[in-house]
Picture 1 (cartoon, rainbow, N blue to C red):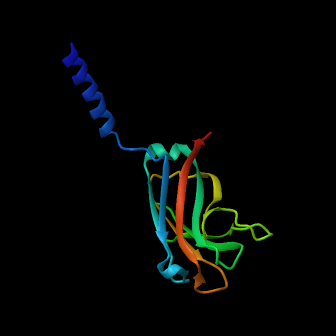
Picture 2: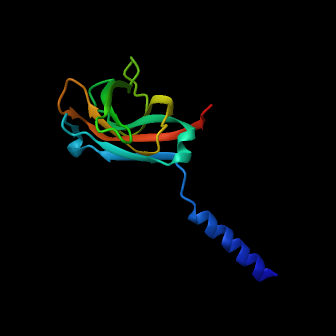
Picture 3: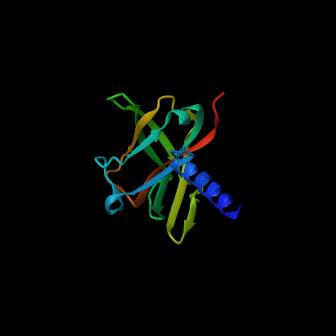
Length: 162
């Protein structure tokens, strides 16, 4: 009887392990070379959505890590999104607020390094299964943009689509 229970439990574990993982959250951060973000460095992320993932709404965030010496209270980005089957990405200019008007950083900080997770779209719909390519291009007047250490993308489930 004990052996039958162990075999049954093992089969359930094996069946669960064979199921493809569903996308609950995606997060990837990339280092900015030399901590100076030049116009020609465009970090890119590829996110794959399975057919069952398209029934959900998602929240999209940009992660930014910078030093206290970052000279601005915000960061402007061009966010490019290439949908499955499309050859040309769609671009949108987005502002990321990083500090209050008083100069106090909005993100969390340790010593002189600050991290931000800034929402750029709530309840986004990824209605086509396949690979989405998302890229970031800094769109500030200063080039290169100093003291930016990392930039990243986070996508997390927000709930079922109505």
